[in-house]
Length: 340
Image 1 (cartoon, rainbow, N blue to C red):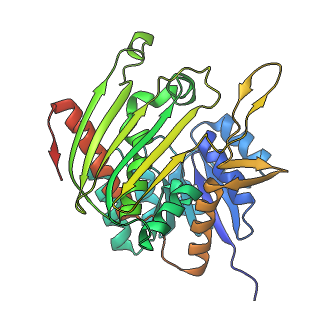
Image 2 (image 1 turned 90 degrees about the vertical axis):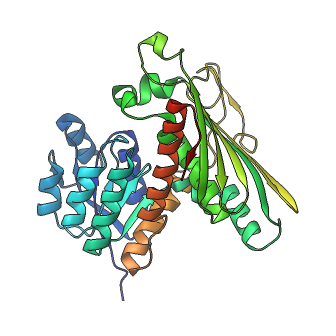
């Protein structure tokens, strides 16, 4: 019997949305049959490049008219609610890029609607498919490391991200949603725990001096209900002269072990006449094939939809992380710890 092909529509064909399309095209059980974006020129170019037959400037029209099994929402952080509700109302399985939302009430609305409609919802915390993260999870669950004590997690960007990559909408998100949502989910997933108390602090100045009214850096501590605590650090003002746009490091301390993760340490170095760089090895393309955690997260979504299996990370996971990251923002604004 031939494998079921999952027909997918992608809402948002910017940089990340295009990456989704490229990944889906390399997953045998997936077929991108439709795409939607308000940027008509960009939409036309992307659909022509990837031979997508159905193009819509209105996602409401897409979810009503296109013959699809699932939808992938790849829009700016604060724009997930309405397209998610539209896809859920149409009875389509749903993948939403992290963060699920930037407001707790919006994340709650998405999860509630999906549950009531019987739609399966996945929040795309793709970092769970990074090999170092998965290996720590496996070792902890197997009992090799003992009980959790502390985690330090840093995930930062260079200035390229707020000043170029997401400049048009950077003021509509913040570092806890854009970056910490990944690291918070990593720790929450590995621990299998929920946050009890959050304290956050932020500083600004560099980006505001450039006319971009957002914070430069956030630092947060989180206490978990398993007795452990963690520190999360994110900034996006690192110099663009760095050899990689991402700085990602983790340190886990357990009662009977430890684990260390440096996303750059295991990578190769490359220099040309123009520049020195560290090519991204956790997710990369070689010989025309995409490899790594980004495509593996999407493969899981496709396989789960095709086989009617449980989707994860779930909408509930997205909601839990939204509550934590929202509490970090609130704590930094109020200057006091937030109980969850």
